[in-house]
Image (cartoon, rainbow, N blue to C red; front, side):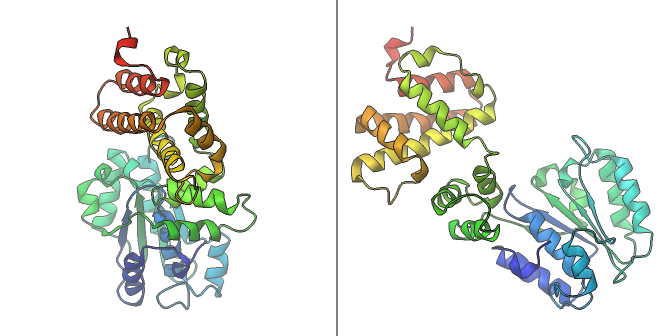
Length: 331
């Protein structure tokens, strides 16, 4: 379990949390922001500091409470997660019952609620009643990716902390902190840090293969290599709007690299350096004006998809451009 001083980025948030630890601790905190930026990491670090016997502004890392919490088995730290699609009312009632018991260690209990926006309405109302009359010596930490999904009355009773995106260098630092045995090289880490949009969680997903980047790039290369016939083939992988949005994003990023390679012949500004052979292949398959047309079409497709235009129309316009077919070739 981390300590606050080792949490990468979010300096203003960490400063406020450290001030709370040396001053007055509130009964409820809400950590909101995009997924994968480190909210849960910060929440666990804050919880560890709250349970520390000797720390001032952070966990000391040496006391009995810190030793136990580092192993993830502290009896006064309780983590609530969704059961299936939501956090159920029986989970909140169990939390309410647990909060009534005396703490084992410092006299404080911490309840950390992951994906707090997934509380059912009944669960949220139950939690609201707990916040209105908070038990003594209990601190609640709510983690959410979607503040709009939170009950406003619950939010109003929490101290709110907004987490933003990290810089590329900060993402690289997070990746480095995962250890040298993680199984990826520096080039792969740099690609992931560039493509993740400031979300180290997403970067780690790319590196461990649980994201869809590889599949989307292979799909793109299949469309390119089998053109023009590929434009008429069914593309089941892009049936979901989220997958189509991801595909369009990778088309933009990849053809950007192709254009840079065509202009400079250098990989210095290339993002997808781990797919250099693909970039060279595409650079030989398309002239610069064609690459520019694909980029413009992909940018328009991204905007149209965000405006809820029919997905098939958005996909067709992009596939026809990649396949080198004009408007007159569609009928």
